[in-house]
Image 1: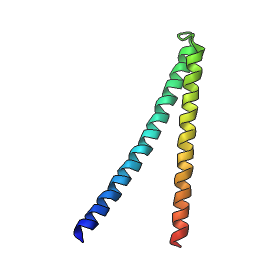
Image 2: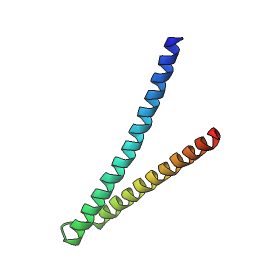
Image 3: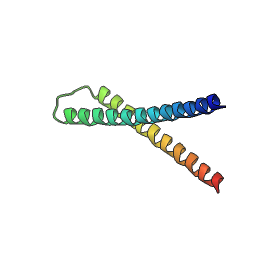
Length: 88
């Protein structure tokens, strides 16, 4: 009996860590791509970069990263709402 309880607790902790690391990774990705886009925009404005193509690609990456984070947030809120509804 005790083995099963600790195994279930360990599995739950592993899932929590996995979820936490995925969420952390998504947030870090957004921060990194936004920082790169700001840096590119600054360098473009002062004439340090003349490759508009790379700037546009980095801006698109930042937009996709942000959209991914927003969708993840929406799914988390939906799941939380569903759990709260079930508990009532």
